[in-house]
Image 1 (cartoon, rainbow, N blue to C red):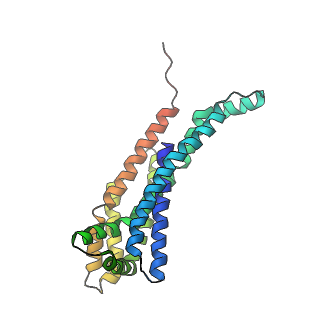
Image 2 (spheres, rainbow, N blue to C red; image 1 turned 90 degrees about the vertical axis):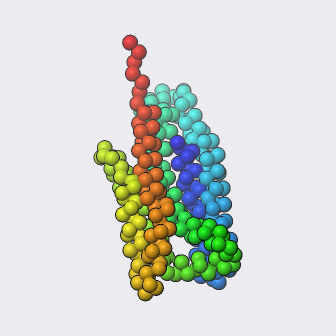
Image 3 (cartoon, one colour; image 1 turned 180 degrees about the horizontal axis):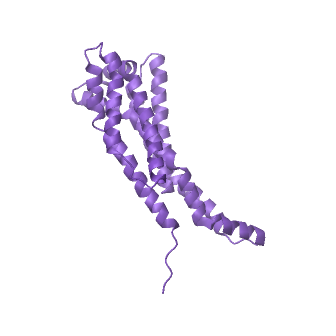
Length: 239
């Protein structure tokens, strides 16, 4: 679980870095926006793989130090009070919970809409050079809709944690549907001037991934909390 959470974080960092490069390119000529969009996904994959590979080595090294017997009795007592290797690993996993869900949702909020548009444009025969203009237009007209979805995604993860801490059911799809409505409504600000095309397009695009994205975060958080609780529950003594 530690490796999977680290992989999600570092993959998302790679994707967000690529999107940031797109913003810089848009500000200074917008010559490589489509290429940078594709590179963003490559960075996401590279970050995910690197995070998965390195995290296991890092965690095992730390857990080994907490599992080794101490020659100093006072250090041994302190080690026992900390709970040993298992509790060390569980603490490291728990600290990653919010970031491991927030970062992927933010990354998808930024990259998924433009990527879906690129897929459709490619099927229609559009070139990468032609799609550069579409990306620039999207950033200008509905960039604030991306920002709205990012804010709602961050809030969603915080609400999931609050619900799980309180012992309540984590809400996913319903909150995702509400996020879709708010995101489309945000796009309607300039969209009202442009014959409502931007909000309709945002709603159609978001419907393909926003509810699923919110549902995945809630469902996955529940499963990971449950697995972590089971790992920390001592086995029942044999009769």
